[in-house]
Image (cartoon, rainbow, N blue to C red):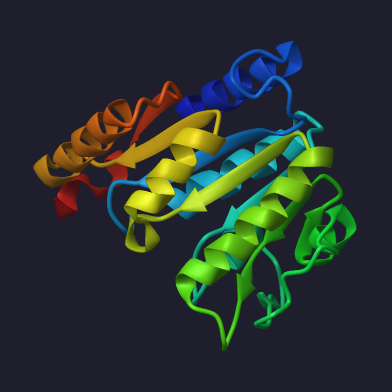
Length: 212
């Protein structure tokens, strides 16, 4: 993934938000889903880079939503010391889940960038996804961008449906291998089948060429 490709993409998203164009024009935040065609392609790295560039260079408020509920290395890419995911408990989903509560579940990276990362000893993955989507919806009310970090290892058809319904832009990270390209084609065809009109941007990670 070259810096030129990344910066060009970020500029496009930023200009699109300024014009308030596209399917998310009635919502403050633009939602960008970053999805890996398989694990280990740098999906989290790309999401982190987009968030850092938008917050540092474009002065746009961003929240990175971490969809890895057990482990992950987003703190490493964002340079967050002593990082711990926020703990949620069963029965904690109440009417009081407003913007302030959702903000309390995030961790500041800089003045314009936060990360939402949760875990639970009681809730399963599907329940955690419901929580994090509610938090993301609240956070979208007063931020410029919601960046969804979706690695292939934790994705499902329900995640793809969520992307098709809630996100403005779908960034698909691939590598130059037959398996990765086939998976990318399958995902794009599935989005078309369910009637999604979200813009899809393909990002090629050439750094893994020797491993394919």
